[in-house]
Length: 77
Image (cartoon, rainbow, N blue to C red; front, side, top):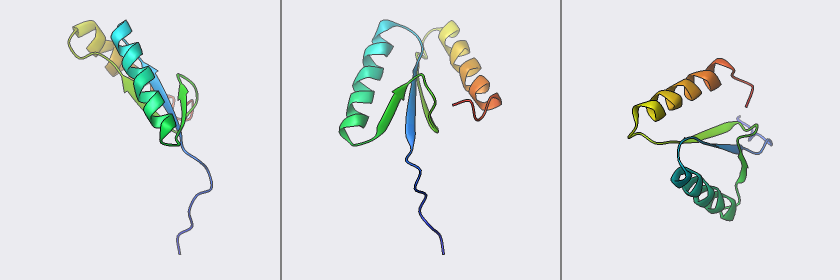
């Protein structure tokens, strides 16, 4: 029989890129909090959302490096 984990998920929103991304992350975090989710910004969390830009090559590279870095440091966040 499976038991439900008592640990509540914490969603970590990481924002990369321009000020538009910051605004979008703030809207997303507000919506998640309104849904009763535990949300942090660029802190420890067991769920990670990376909000970034896919139009500029430097931003794409930064996004990939961030994802790989978080994966390599599993347990950091």
